[in-house]
Image (cartoon, rainbow, N blue to C red; front, side, top):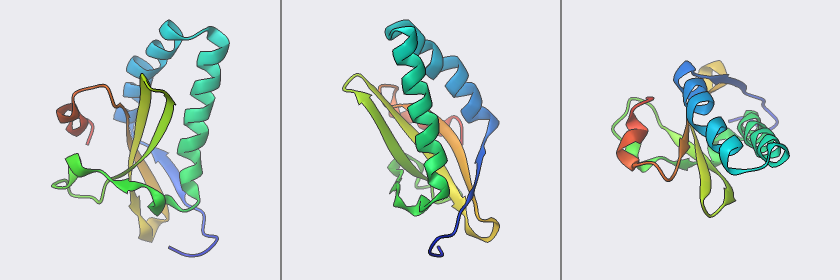
Amino acid sequence: MGEGKLYKIVIARPAVIRYQEHVLPYLYENFSFDRATEIDEKIIRKAGALSDKPARGSREKYLKEAGEDFRFILHRETRHFEIKIIYYIREKESTVYITDFFPTKMSPERIKENQ
């Protein structure tokens, strides 16, 4: 991964659906509107930051058998709200594919659903 190289970010449809159907409703039900909006923006910024040095994420142990080298970065807002931003890198395409926004309080077996 080249120094100063920027990667394109692609968010897979299942990741968008999980975010819209699970993450956002949780935020707006459990935080004030302003705080939920702030957290939402932080998560999106963190995902966008993968365009620079995407390999910094940890390997996702629950996806070792999958066809890609899945990694994740963690967004922790409170001890009760953490999101794994799960992705893989296609070096030849200079692209990071985000495949899930996985709430860590969900059963780990469900992490395979969006891959």
